[in-house]
Image 1 (spheres, rainbow, N blue to C red):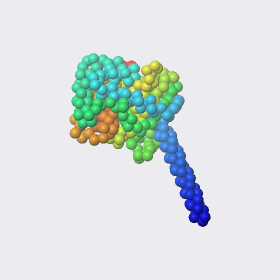
Image 2: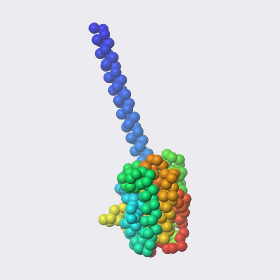
Image 3: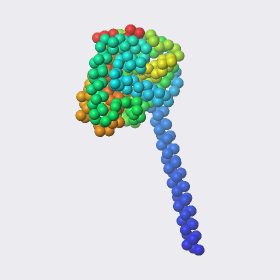
Image 4: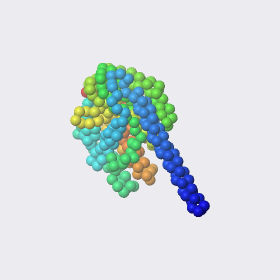
Length: 315
């Protein structure tokens, strides 16, 4: 009888211990979720400083899924079979679109397609499958977004912001320095309001009620954070808005050089296809902002580059 009581007591004790452990595990999961939410809010608050401080109204800080998909589709079209500047232009805001289409018709497509073929052939030989970045959920996993509505275009001389603002590398791996973010936003404002396109050039294509957005993504292979700017064109969705406008000659050359660089590095590609996809995505995005191959800063990436050719006329 005593043994039976002992067995029952032990069972009750184990059940109670399991209940307490379950409560602790649940509490730990809740705390982790709360920490993630707080971190996301802090990241969004920092990113808010990249947007113009006046002339906009923040609508959302949770729209990164749609913006991430827009970025992925843009990159994928740049390295797909038969890639063309016309296809890429469909993902760029309308102020720059026609200039890219014209560049493709004048021979830019041939240079790009030759480089893309080299890249795709090398990719298939190593990973035994076709290159398709849209099918990889691991690309651009770490993103933060802020979506806003334009309320006063006259105050948006700092739009779009630099793609590689100096503050993006500050504050360590866990965050950024807000004061640095504000400083760089002001620097961008001064730069853009006095560029070759003229004061308040963004007013030429932005109007009250337009939706704009910034998406910050971490580039693991680069050790940097890239800020992408978007304009939501009515009935057309989110389109990349390149700082300073697109110089078609430099854009075509930059993209082609980055793709060639990737193909030339095929022997050092990682065994993990996910890592390779991220590296390809990083380089293609950097090419849009006229950085040196490998990620060196140049031109529009910092918002202060110069060019021998003029930006698109509608900017």
